[in-house]
Length: 360
Ligand SMILES: Cc1ncc(COP(=O)(O)O)c(C=O)c1O
Image (cartoon, rainbow, N blue to C red; front, side):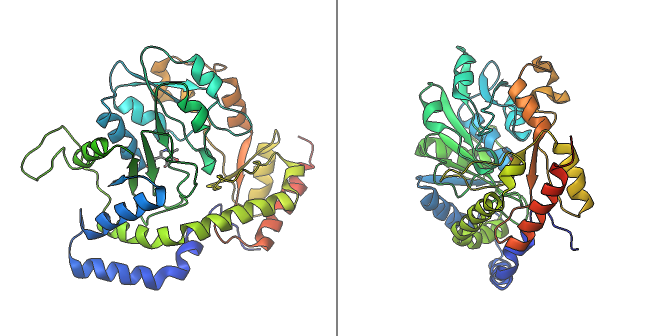
């Protein structure tokens, strides 16, 4: 039996190889590799897609967050509320700016920030709330926006959802190769509604400079390069098809009865299924059984960020975020990508069925 990967990135771009090769040839022919015409065009196309006036391409999704925080003047003495159940980069970026990540609980069903718990953690030092659209599911932006502090959306996992980049002062994206919209290397983007903020971010990504000789801010060297921008221009045209295929694959898992064996994500229209993350108290046994069958699975954020060694200085203890900690012990993802076929999904569900009936 062939092995089944968690995400088959190559299957997604295989039909586009000729178009990609032409794009590479065009960049080679043009000879500009940094801050060239593909980036300018991609930034406009991405802004139109997201429905925002401005986007700025940067080196990766982590830099996107750090640069937004910098542009907003968020740093030492400031607090930013974010989930602990997210990829490390979310809180690392806040800490990198010298600000304090304040971890809030999540809703155990949606796995996204719980607005009530966020509200309880707001202090006079809170400068922003940073929801993450986790696993492609939109965070409750409207409710979070009502709480007062600025919203900065970490949308690394949710490009393509109509429900992101709506309420935040800025939204950040990653184009790491497993993301829904991906580059063939590192890449990131910031989407903003405010032109002045956008201009500051544009300067910050290139050493704080408008023209190459005058430097207005202490900045960064973080650009989305021409080859990646050319790739992203092609992939953006396919994103809605890919999202439809992901949503169909998620629905198929539900139809195949996966939800009778383990908890599966409920659907909502804006969910773009970056990952299909399930939950079971038999998580470890199920993962081991699937591995024996050659089926890759993932598990996320264990230890969660509030218990990571690098963030121990924040003083969180085990048990301080019980919903997060329990979810970190029980979640696992099953294979899903745009174009996964029904037979592969049936094999996954059969394997879970075999494993889940084994007593825990
Ligand atoms: C939620 C989240 N935030 C931030 C990042 C950082 O993005 P990058 O790897 O492009 O720096 C990622 C992904 O890697 C992510 O999943």
